[in-house]
Image (cartoon, rainbow, N blue to C red; front, side, top):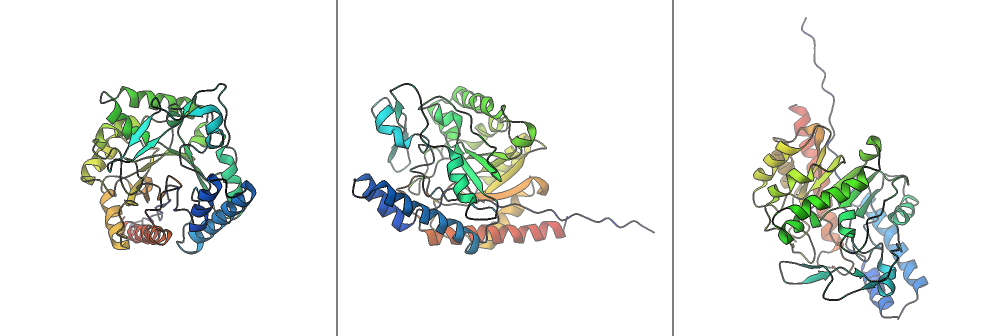
Amino acid sequence: MASEVIHRWISIPSELIGSIPRTQELVQARTQFESDLMTIEDFRKIENVAVEKTIRELDQVTGSMVLSDGEQTKPSFVTYPIYDLVFERYKFDKQCFQITFADGHVRTLPRLVKAPFKYANYAYKYLNFAKSLTNKPIKQAVITASALSMVYSPHLLNTEQGAHAVQLDFTEARLSLKVDRSGHLLKDFIKINNRVLDRFNANEQKKIGVHVCPGGDLDCAHSSDIDYTLLLPDLFQLHLTNFYIQLSSEQDRIKVLKCIQKHMKSNHRIFIGVIDPCNPIIESAETVRDRVLEAAKFIPIKQLGTTDDCGFSPFADDTSTSREVCYEKIKARIQGTKMAEQILNTHH
């Protein structure tokens, strides 16, 4: 009698990148607070309400299994550690690093001018508050050491606070190839980040991931003209497990998937971007399903995951996407991933 092979069901995890458009009340409150028209106590109350609302909606409206505070209280994904010290220890001038986006708008990083270096905020503060609001797993996005190196010295992030996953936002990776076509700057960034990652043991590194994209702000990018395949071989040298890779907005997804297949390692989990936050058109679940099935031709299902190409609002003043559109896109990602998971396991 022939033995019957029982296949174990393989789930495909799906996670958001991080930022969700701020609530309208929070956007208005930040403007008032920064104009000295609101006390910090009143501003903090509105921030807390926005976080509570975001976590509740991600859970109940989108059905997300892994939640986030949506970065509601961060002024931006990169400056949050030093924002409260900007006018005391940092300066904005012509020597600052500037990021120019496709439509011409510029984001400027502050420059440290007064020693010693100090942090004003740590990511665990956001994590602890979010964890107090839900029993579901919380993902915490943090800025990379290499990005911080453009304004101040790298600092070790404490990951012992109970985050389900920690994601390093490495948007400067692709941008570095625009600044330095030789790739030396990218390799330096990889070395800087590995110096931080090497402080964690193998089990801790399983919780750590990295997100790369060509930037996403006000519905446009800063480095989508840079060939993705020039970045990926070095990216996979990072000493971590999870890779959140923008893909849905790429012109040649197959070329990128072949490069991923060639350079990924057996212990890696690849979360492919199946939703484009910069495109106002809401993807259907079927579109997401097809993108997952396409990726599964190159990435083993046991190493596959899905995500969004980028955060929906990396900077607090970015209101180019509504929360309603954001949630519909997230729902499509979750539903489409489940559809693909069903097909892949049925034909496994």
